[in-house]
Amino acid sequence: MNNKKLLRLLPSVDQMLRKPEVAGLIEQYARVTVTESLREILQETRDRVMDGGFDESATATGMEEGIVEALAERLRRKGLGRLKEVINGTGVVIHTNLGRSPVPESAVADLSRLAGRYINLEYNLQRGVRGSRHDLVRDLVCGTTGAEDCIVVNNNAAAVLLTLSAMASGKEAIVSRGELVEIGGSFRIPEVMEQGGARLVEVGTTNKTYIEDYQKAIGEDTAMLLKVHTSNYRICGFTDEVSRQELASLGRKRGIPVVEDLGSGILVHLEEYGIVGEPTVQDSIKSGIDIVTFSGDKLLGASQAGIIAGKSKYIKRIAKHPLARAVRVDRLTLAVLESTLRIYAQGERVLDRIPVLNMLTIPVSTLEQRAERLMELVTDIKAYAKVTIEKEYSQVGGGALPLERIETRVLTIEPKEMAVNELEKGLRMAKTPVIGRIVRDRYLIDVRTVFDEQLPVLAGMLIGVLSGGDGS
Ligand SMILES: *Cc1c(COP(=O)(O)O)cnc(C)c1O
Image (tube, rainbow, N blue to C red):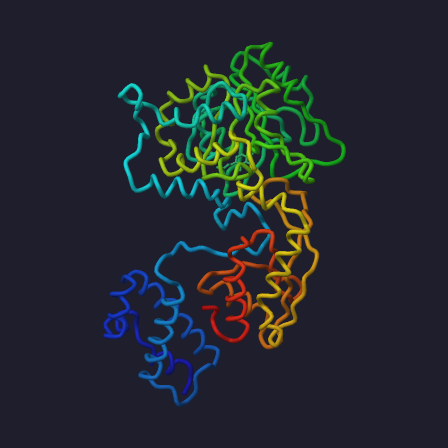
């Protein structure tokens, strides 16, 4: 039988959806979910036909039975929700694809207490009148960073857009050529400025910009001097950039506000842990910058948000702009942000309690112990794979500190009976998905980004997949 004839034996999605066994699955998992998985399986079966995976003996009934079985299995494995916990074995701490920052436990507790109830989001309980959602975190942000005032929006991209729209629309904003960055996901500074209605005036060159370059470019229409932290790349070698102090003092002298897009927005110094080159928000404010913008879910370690902090008169103007309503922060985000900022404000065990900071500063000896514990938990896989603990390097991720390589420990797995990409796929599709990486035909799990509580689950998935099960 040729492939064409075999393909004709395959049922359509509609035919399958009408089968009583599939109706049972629809009741359990919802129609859209079943249809989606069914399409995947039909496509895979078609591919198998083309690869010669069926022979003369194939029948329509046999194929349909196989599809129903595979469908039930896939749905069971996917579980009920689309969003699920995954185990990050990549060692990339701020992993954009995996939700960036896991939030602190205390923030999770606060969120679960508040999310399902009414809250005083915009209600002043003391005075019994309407309040502002921005009041909820103002003292925390200002107390920690030294800023006079702040507002919180959806994300840092929105913070930059709103700031430009409110302060430089129809006017000029001066930026160094060395800072015209693309952050990823098509967030490019020149394009954001265009959206914000500001005319971009580029000064200096890619590798060198001097204060005189800014001075010369200032004209009647200049509404802002903008500094952008080049978080995701470094210009090395023959370079010069204007310091924050210099730029702030020029702005003060000429009566022009100076804005800095900091990107990551770290609130603590991590130099003693070998993490250098990321300016803190308080450093920026202290050097005289009028407005700083930064993310809530990069090195700050809270929820996705953009924080605009600085001089009160500018913050007021920004808060009044019509776009502020379009990009305003929602209550769940705010609850997590408030809770996380409280940890910084209290100042106790900050590095322990904020997961991203914990992962970045964890001693190698602790990573070694974690790797050994995992090794013990997977003793059973020795028959199926060669397993070792090795030294490797983790990354900060999220576009922050691109050159930073932090020493870590990885579990390396060299399967004996399956291809390494089969192992990778099996773990990725497991009940609790595990995301690792393949380096020279070995599968690597960086234990830096694996939570201790996840170790037994991770071991279970590894044993399941390697021993030919599915990790559940
Ligand atoms: C990450 C980043 C942004 C965008 O922030 P989001 O929170 O992802 O919206 C903007 N500017 C800089 C310099 C960044 O590093």
